[in-house]
Amino acid sequence: MKPYGTILVVDDNPSILTAMHYLLDGMFERILTLDNPDGILKMMAQQPVDLVLLDMNFTLGVNNGQEGCFWLRTILKYHPQTPVVLLTAYADVDLAVKGLKSGAADFVTKPWDNDELIRKLKDVLDGQQAIDSLDVVEKEHIRRAIDRCHGNLTQAAELLGITRQTLYNKLK
Image (cartoon, rainbow, N blue to C red; front, side, top):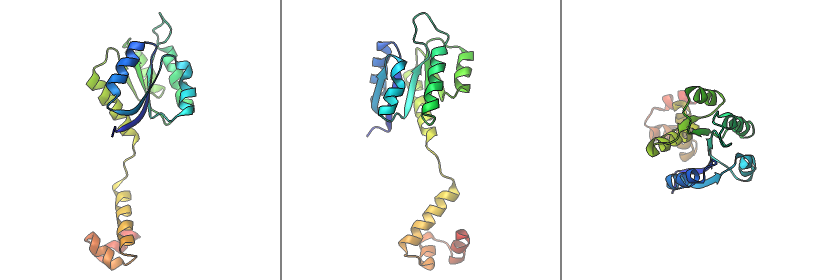
């Protein structure tokens, strides 16, 4: 089973799309690709996307990243929970900062290092999964113990390895 759901890769270079498809095949259940950003919202409306890998430049000869920033803002407007990782051949610290300030989850430059790209994507996706506090985990564990013992607090306390009084205090 592949650990992650669906990624949408948007880049005007067909070679980049092919390379990403091969690279990410073992990581994602589905890899969607678009060579034109105009189809992003339509595709995302038709199927759930867990992460977008978005090129910053689509017009030949233009490399200021404005198109990528526009599409980043557009994606986040309609799909605020979907993380977007920006991808560009023009490594520029100011552009990276602008993208991150606009809500990008991370920034990758071309040519990319395969291991680094995969690590960044995993970090972004894993960061989306909430980690319950110890208090929440403990309360859930206590609830399951009480359910298993059909509400008998003495038995539940024994099952949990604590005194009945400690269990009672935790229930307050």
